Length: 149
Image (tube, rainbow, N blue to C red; front, side, top):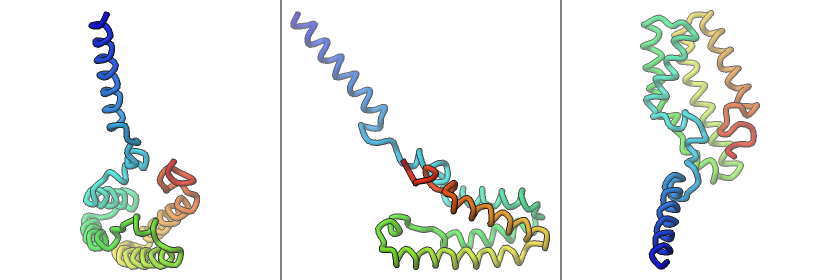
């Protein structure tokens, strides 16, 4: 009887250990898993995806593609942002940070448009407008409307 009790105790311990390892050591699931692929991509991968989308949507020539890639690389470092600073900042600081991010994006857009034809600029503006609408409606945010769950 004593051996059976020890055996059950060891079995219970092993089962508990297995469950805790499956859940990441008992911690909450990683936020990056819930936030989508964008958070898991390296800056280089995001740059490649962004460029590929522009090539396909705007039907860029090889020459335009090379120029846009150069512009995107130039602004990649400027647009890297520490979101923890935004979370911990006051409302005035957040507004200033948003203003700075928008300024950088406008500079980048201006340079990209200089490479595009008139028809491509129209398409690019439409893409930007859709992106802005999605952002306003909360569709581009982590976890959808209301932020992460």
